[in-house]
Image (tube, rainbow, N blue to C red; front, side, top):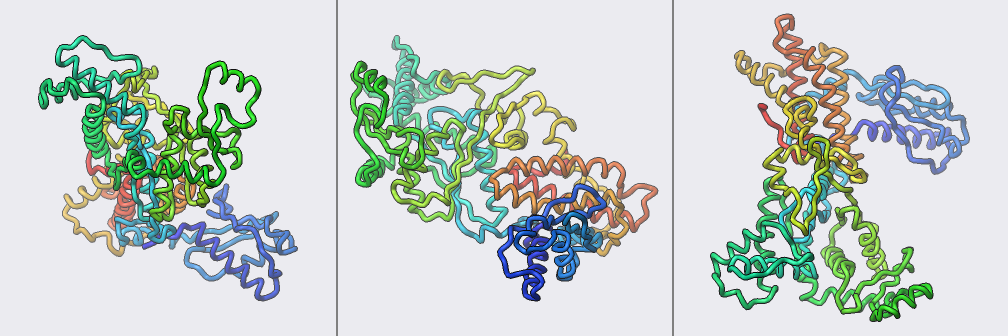
Length: 574
């Protein structure tokens, strides 16, 4: 069952009234702006309001008169109890209290797996690429935000009717992988007693020591004369396994791990270079076209060799970008363009990339290169995530991947659990940095938002157990008189019914943090009501008890659905 958000229902009613007024000749046949449905600021103004001021130019009437015409022409609806026109041109909507309470039955009778499901995706296929960490070590906290955001955006799309293909771009080419292989080679030699040391550019993490020990146990000293390549392949396979195991612990599963090296093996990388050149979008030079005399002289003094440049300035960039270095090695941009060409050829209806904020320029360059190749990039969205800082005792923990100084995602899961990680990584907009407070994360109190939200579900489940323990039948609340619910309880139902609206808005803006914010707001409204609205209290009549049980049954399902959309569990006990 699809739950149409209340604002969308009101918008449809207003449009119907406008069309009728146009047919009747009251309004002229003119285009008009999008109808804005907003929440009213005061209770005496109803729950929703439509400002008609923006329609005045189209219909050549005063806004207050336009509101009156629309009010008179609104179709009958069980949703709306009444409307009121207010100066200078607002049409206020008062939602029917009977409709509000009856939604408890709608929620309870719905398919719980698709509660509040939206159908804007119409089962089209979206590719969501995220995480895509270089396989040079265990997943660390710095990479975790992109993983959680990417998976949560996938869940948002699924809740809005899309089929989602989750993809991890496995960067197993380039200099960093050579350094990984050589780092493991050094560790292997050390295990065999050779006097050799890691260099500054090598990876320093202890995980390579464990890997080297495994190599010695498997192959003894038979790899002594091998170069970095087999060590790289061994490390890559081991790290790939580690990454998959770690992700499974936090509820993330990919449909495809796409290997960067495949783009070199099938010549796609060089095909992109050649196609850009054939279209006149590249040139060979030591410095970019239009460079200053100072830069030209500096390049000459350094003896730099020509590189291959992409004329990204043709597509709005501030400067041209190198796509092949003077030594013949491509920059990150070229294989990334080839990868996106591959995805576009797979005919997804939408592509969404989740990158760290340090990839902003690269993402822009890839987009411009795709345009240069003749592709329509309007169905490609890029979400950039800001940094995550682990905080303990008010102090930020320093991290460095190459030096091996970091907290792994496995370590964090062991300390605080997957639900806390998912929520803490979601509760801020992606354009804001996160301070992940480790001390707050482990608290089993209302200070911890994860505990506070999940405890609302636990309390609902506890009520069900209490009712069962008293010997009441499972359908005791069927046919309950919901008109007996009080104002506070009705307000909470109204809050639950906001979820489809929040869900769609979060989807449209690729902003999963809005779900986290809503979840906490819902819990904040739930707990005070719970303290005052007992089901089995001595002073509670049976009819009121049945109505409240109906309320808590629905609340349990809504909390479960909200938690599921965030990829979190809905515990029965805590």
